[in-house]
View 1 (cartoon, rainbow, N blue to C red):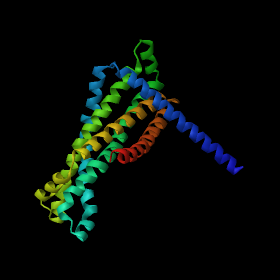
View 2 (view 1 turned 120 degrees about the horizontal axis):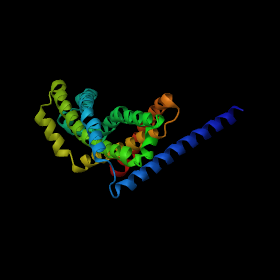
View 3 (view 1 turned 180 degrees about the vertical axis):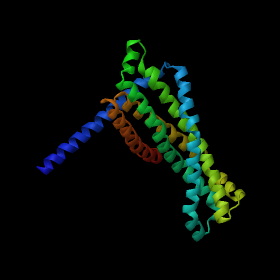
View 4 (view 1 turned 90 degrees about the horizontal axis):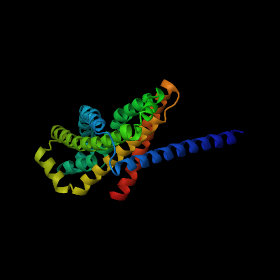
Amino acid sequence: MGLKLSLIQVGHLILLISEQIGGAAILLGQIFKRLIPPRFDALEFRKCLFSMGYKSLSIMIATAFVVGVILVIQSFVFVERYGMRSQLGWGAGFVIIRELGPVLLALMFSGRVGAFTTAELGTMTVTEQVDGLRCLAIDPISFLVVPRFLAMIISLASLTLIGNAVALVSASIMGEIMMDVDSHTFWSSLFSMLTAGDIFLSVTKSVLFGAIIAVNSCYFGLSTTGGAPGVGIAVNRTVVSSAVAVFVVDFFSTFVLG
């Protein structure tokens, strides 16, 4: 009986995941359909860029600064043991630019922007504002979803580049304080080993992460049911599914492009 119940639960879980993946894929297709040729609200797009990009700048900079500091603190033991002070800049840059920066900033972006977008669209859905747009012959995908999709991709890519730079600066400062690695040595080792491919991988990851967060947040927002409790459930699903998807895409993008 217990085994049968477990199989039923696993089956329900598989069906739920399949439904969500299929719904998100359909939404992504609808977005691309409205991007070729471009059909979306430009004013809404500018508003989303301001709220998602500019207003997220401070928290992203703070997160990136802490990432650089923690990375140097954790590297202290290994650098001291193996005498690799001259390579601190390259090591910090390699980890921050290729991995820690894009992933951690994407998770922070998902918690702030993705959750807010789901709550916003979910509230509009349960209060029938989205249906009202359809009654006024306004396409909700073009008016609500596409501007947020583009804004999230552009915002996260830009914030990741800025965050990487801030994390490297904080790593340089902490390296000089903790390990007596002067800034010239730090930046020389970084730029002597850093390649355009590393930056390309970082930007590519941030674009993919932004697209994933955008599709997830818009899908769960527009599919919200059950009033105010349903909005909370949708936000929770957005954060969890986006985090899982970020790690999965990070693995495959690193494996293919790294």
